[in-house]
Image (tube, rainbow over all chains, first blue to last red; front, top):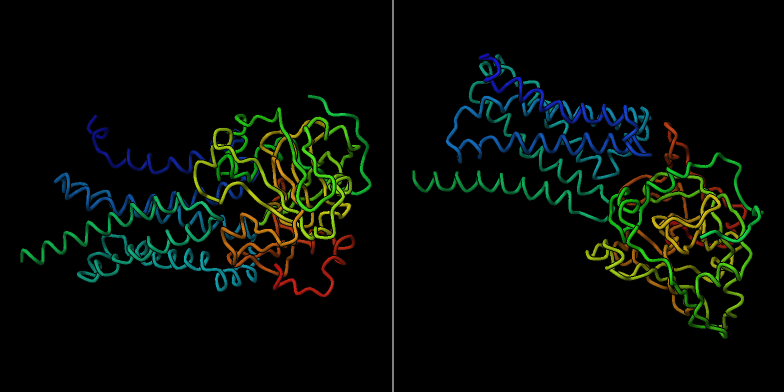
Length: 196
Length: 264
């Protein structure tokens, strides 16, 4: 039963939970009376959650000393991208029904849509260069490319914050956690330069 | 409690009506939380009896009405209205109520009365959402006197032939069908006739985004989203939003000569 001790398949199943939940709610009439809004928002918040979990790997590794944690970062990041794609699809298809003229106007005119689109475009090269082969080919530049997750996550939080009508609680929670993770990195870098 | 008998109103739409479940499970009523499922979950704590509504300010006959006396005082009628939320969704709702004009006429507004200000209940014990300063409580809304006297403007006390559910603004709420939903104040305790244009809660919260008039207008976007289309709850494709929510024939004259971009 060695395969049961490998955390990877388990993590994969856990990462499917948001999608399975939507499927279950859809099947049991649990998506509320505005299911399109529910689905789009749910996929959006899970994308942010996925990005934050990806960004949590490095601090978790440093704080626990478990270097093996980094093995799971790629799957988390790819799932975040997967939910981002579904979120974008639900906007294009369910919400706007491919009304391209309206969407172009939306992206140019409305900061919250613009930031969402920017976040997606920043994540795209990360997903495309997530393979071992790309890592080898890019060498040192791979890290530079994947640094893009920071602006992507910031754009994602702004995208959420700009959308809500008044109550900023939820976006502030995501923003606070993101600020904490970024702050930790700045702090560690500062300590390193001081020590060195 | 059962409502007195009512008749079908003269105004209304023949469009299919949204279901009772849709109308009572998807609400913006920040007094009970900012999620649209919150009002249905939390509004049970609202005590709708005893309840009084005071008519005061620039009128000759101010009065504090008991809610049951008020419901009996004016003949009730059913009005099937479209409701367009500023967020971009809409419903068709069979309200039960009476024209606000009937009540205002009885109060006899004086020449100083230019506007009407509506205040909702302020009681954080009954309205848990008020424990957070999301808006400047109590919820305040306002209409110009001629808007308030318009025959379409309704004080609703019921829905689907029954007493108004708490999450929909029991025991008495305003319904102004050609304006975005937030203009229609819920759980009203005070109606004041005033000379100056009232400052509504949403105007205070975000003056750039929510104006005093807030007429449904597909050509004037909300600063952060388009108002050209709406999703009718229960439908898949969005439909175009109509000027004055489709009530232009009845209300456009109220705004003749006004720049609706400036007076949004």
